[in-house]
Image 1 (spheres, rainbow over the protein chains, first blue to last red):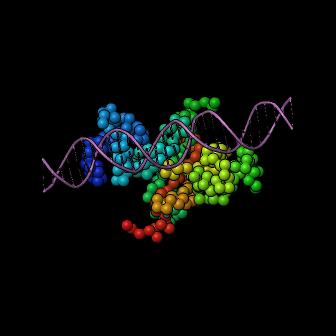
Image 2: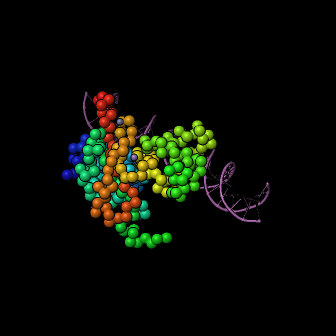
Image 3: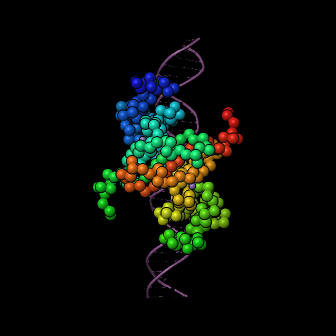
Length: 136
Length: 136
DNA sequence: ATCACCTCTGTAATGATTACAATTTTATAA
DNA sequence: TTATAAAATTGTAATCATTACAGAGGTGAT
Ligand SMILES: [Mn+2]
Ligand SMILES: [Mn+2]
Ligand SMILES: [Zn+2]
Ligand SMILES: [Zn+2]
């Protein structure tokens, strides 16, 4: 589906700026931050304001177009809204997707409450860094 | 076990300030923030500095005396280090403990990496708020 | 053209955390 | 005890992501 149609279908008026931000997320599945998105778009959108990136992502979040991941005092954005977990490397800071069924982590103990969001996060040293990093 | 002995056994020199902070956590299992701890202790420890609370919690964390929970841009501290999940209410902000086996959320998909920490967090409206809060 | 409404912008404010240098306390040696 | 080194604590300033806010710009209806 075209970006404009998809945004419209989700209740977001597809302005040029919004489409560019959406398409950035669509093309970059590495969980970018506001800083990443702003830095990547500002050359081709010279008037872009960082506040607009914040506002747009907030809007996307309300319309469930993206998922927000809070990792160590910074928000990352994920266009993939199907449930999955994340592993972040303490060394290279890469965020890996980890397949996980939502039903697997939502059990009777928590269903007494009304769940709006579930976040499952692992931290450690990724496989790649283990192979290349030496003990100091 | 007495506080001083326990801290010593974990490699932390049991200064008076450190013991007071540890005992606050031991007596308050509601996942307090630095602000909570500082606010609660400053009357009886008039010279206490907020920086000391930060430093002490960082030390406790390194020595695995406490667990740190990052929830919406704020660190909360948990004296209970056995694995369990947390539910935070978007309305009253209470953090509930949710029993959960660590093995249940650590599977082969993530074990390719070296895991140092796992955090499973739910957000939503707690049972208590559902019963008392009306739709606006 | 006028108006209302939405989008976007830039700057200032906020708030949690960290950096850092100075001071106080504690431990150790002479 | 006194001297001295090390550790713990303090207060202030800096950092950094995020939000608040007020104004500018654009669009579409009347
Ligand atoms: Mn993801
Ligand atoms: Mn807990
Ligand atoms: Zn890595
Ligand atoms: Zn509640």
